[in-house]
Image 1 (cartoon, rainbow, N blue to C red):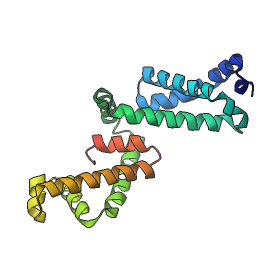
Image 2 (image 1 turned 135 degrees about the horizontal axis):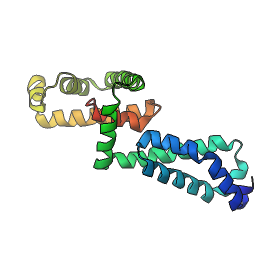
Image 3 (image 1 turned 30 degrees about the vertical axis):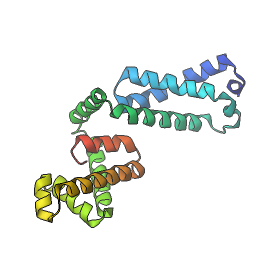
Image 4 (image 1 turned 90 degrees about the vertical axis):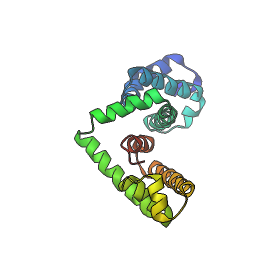
Length: 187
């Protein structure tokens, strides 16, 4: 591949042939043309900086997909912590929550959450269930379980951390699923 030898014209051809696929994936996740464009450029900058590795790549489209996926998920992890972006995605999910694919995502995510909850230690499972499924406050949970409010907070924090990690490792779209759970009140 001539790109691996630094041929800028070949790189431009490669960019033009593949940018729209990466853009559409990035736009699907971010719902922002500007962010999606930045992601595409970042992905191709990474490809250019790693161009010497391209000579050992068997299938460029697979390589590109992996680089793009990793970059997009990395950016999303950082962006979700930014309040305006989180609000933007929250509004998006609320607007499309009645669409069939979103209903499927919700059902699959709820099933994953239930699997994760079943794996929690008994006390964490009780605290999570009383809080998220029965809507009890920390004080009410502490009273019902005869433990301190601080202990309830600790169990809840550990339970939520475990569930987020479980979703991240057991979901095809990890960070988006976790975000969806957070905005829908599951986590």
